[in-house]
Image (cartoon, rainbow, N blue to C red; front, side):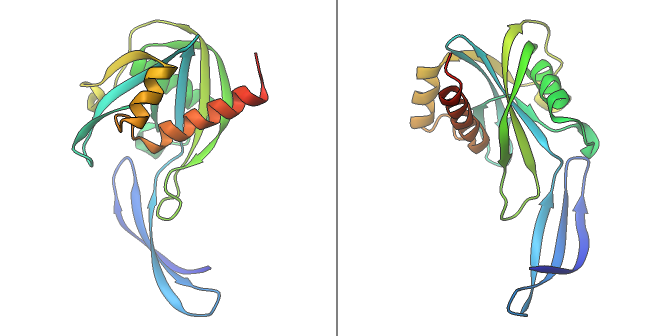
Length: 179
């Protein structure tokens, strides 16, 4: 598919939306809507058998959801993934990690968005004060056992696709690197 034109139709400090004219392999023309967002980092805080999650109100869903700490840099800045991961962990939970291991990449919604994320395992955790952004003031944080996490996924209490996919990356990492 070849891009023939592009125009930005909306932008704010977190994202932009563009409409691209495209030419398909068969020569036919069409349009493609793309949501552009900067890369994000998702962090799996792990202490023994416990996972640290955050819960917040997700406006597009109209629901509060549990998920792993994750986010992007403000103003669509490009920040190195490990630096962003440490920052998101500190901001949302107050935790600091002695070790951050890169587990892999996730594409959020590749049929409509350019956003990609890096998943990190955080261990050697120490507590501190959180530094939440204004939009995160209603956020809660708590520890859950792996069994509780898996039960919450099965019960549709954790539905965040990135968190569930990140957990799968953790399981694959552990399988490849047994303790």
